[in-house]
Length: 408
Picture 1 (cartoon, rainbow, N blue to C red):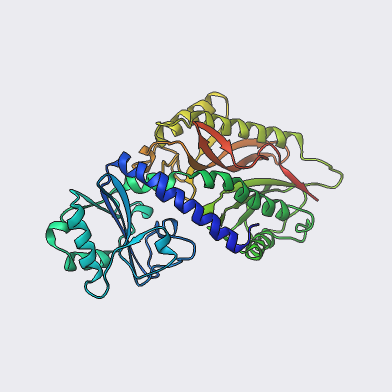
Picture 2 (cartoon, rainbow, N blue to C red; picture 1 turned 180 degrees about the vertical axis):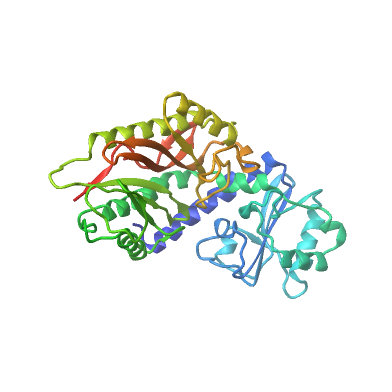
């Protein structure tokens, strides 16, 4: 683990790359001339923490950030209270003694004179591109000229592309983030935590929560532990017994990057020294479906195209698959194409029509159903791996999908 000061340094290195390398390309690609991202203190735009430095944790009363092309040069402007950390990345342009923030913003708009002004209001109701609060919009409408307000428009595409694209430094450190998550899972699925006949699923969940807290990082959802056996699937209050198949769902946030992982663990019966062969074979077939999805994740395809092609191929190969892969990165359920939903195994509109792009991350989340003799019933093999698409090829952030941990 990096100490907090080193984490801040890394996060600011990432921010420089996002603003200097990715942002200009995204704005050109999406035809974005002038972009306002405004946040009130404690009611920040979802993009806020990913476009400001680590030492600037909340908006200062009202923080207004502007991205705009002026004379073919991208300007990054702060119409906000003075702040040394923020001004390493943004040029402050507000004469507080002689004008209000909205007067300053109006002056900048008049100078650059964009035909369209992008604000974070989502056409498709995407949370991460819908950060302009209604109250703040009404205040802008009240304090700024009508002809300027008339130029306001939303742009889901600009926000999605900026948030989904990973920087060089993020790609460098993301495997370390995943390694940290993997170490917590391995510690949870161990004899030091699990005692058959005594430990509950909730006990294992609490261990993971405490470990995350000890490391000074966070989760973006509560760790989940459940199990399957000959009597079916059971939840958090269940006592873990020998012969159970444990399943975890776990995602951390570290260096502003999210992970999302599901792994399996088998509790050995008396006299057993290894995971039963039929369970290993079931995992191999699940891994095959992971490969099918990875093969279909081609840049330029929509999420719906990946979903339909993957499900069809899986069924052709005799699998009983479900697919609900989602973008992963700065958010757990992140910006980009939805590739099926657990609750809806059909093409998804509109989110499924977003395209797969290079330098983007995903939670390769899916399951396959198998009839297992050991349980005398259908059993679900739930897996999820954090992956990234580089040069059109899927890369796993951590290896280990081929095995099932064992305890007992």
